[in-house]
Image 1 (cartoon, rainbow, N blue to C red):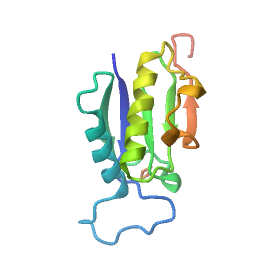
Image 2: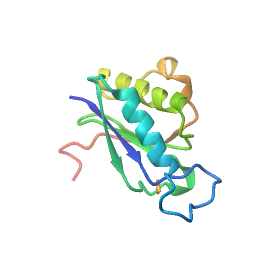
Image 3: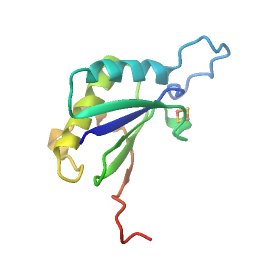
Amino acid sequence: MTTVITVCDTCRTEGTEKPTDDTIVRDGAKLAALVEAASIGNPNVSVRRHSCLMGCQGGCNVALQAEGKLTYVLGRFEPNADAASGIVEYATLHDESAMGQVPFKQWPAAIKGHFVTRIPVLDSTDK
Ligand code: FES
């Protein structure tokens, strides 16, 4: 099993103006490309894109999910290589953990301060 990184490809960095031209590559698409590049050859993660995770005020946003594990949403990223490698590194640790909980001392510096929500595992008793 892998941890799936969902990158919002329509996000824009917090405080920036909405592009007036559809040919302009969104910050989210830039981050998605960097995360995809950083994950090449990594068997612990897979990456997908999605347009809008409904956290637009705090872009750029990503979500980390794996079956039977905690889900995390992180945001306020700049579309740069440091952020992308930190996201992939954290997702790798998420995949390697039993429940998706990664000890703070293992967190990559690039993801500190970027957590938005943590969502518990959904199980058969949650009806
Ligand atoms: S555009 Fe990225 S969360 Fe809405």
